[in-house]
Amino acid sequence: MAITELKDLKGMDVVKQATFAYLACERLFPNYVYFSENYHFGNPSTLRKVIDFIHDHLLELEPNKNQITSHIKEIEKNTPGTEDFTTTFVSSALDACAAIFESLNFLVDKNFSRIETISTLATDTVDMYIQEIEALDFNKDKDFRQKINNHFLMKKEVAIQSGITGYLNSRKSIDSDDIQTLLNLQESNKKGSLGL
Image (cartoon, rainbow, N blue to C red; front, side, top):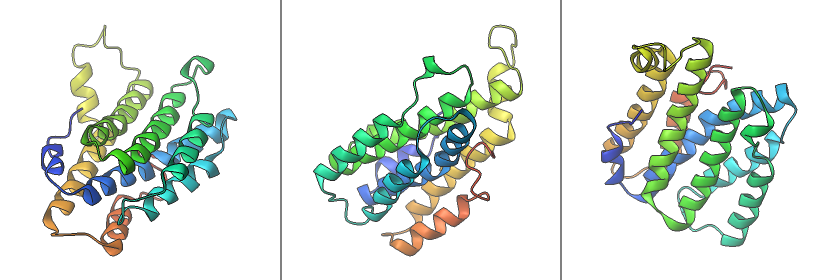
């Protein structure tokens, strides 16, 4: 599901774009933790360390490229393969890793297409989970897309992304207090975008 406000985000500075990416990583991280703890794969503390690295470089956006390369390798080692697991939760863990990977690369290349990808990863995670918990089948349900878009988890994710974009757009520039405010606004008892 595309977030219409992303067109506004495209016109903002790279610090605001990186903040949007960072906040998505924070929302997706608990989904990875859930997968890791229940399916015995990966090391959440490694991902936590990399997300903290992204946070620490939001306002300067000039991180050491060797550190970025090292973090990318760590993420790759902790990324599950969907063919190795039968659970839908592998997709949400994979999306979390992909969002962190894209965010790290954004710190270097400032390519806005990575922000669009991160937004899509966040909604795709919710989409897949709704399909699972509601037992939705695209081939059998003519209201398939409508049911997903109207589900409270999807509405929440879309509202969060829209709200973050609106907040960023309302500020001339942002600082660490703004980042913390946005983080607090999206927090849901650290349960992530799926409420796990």
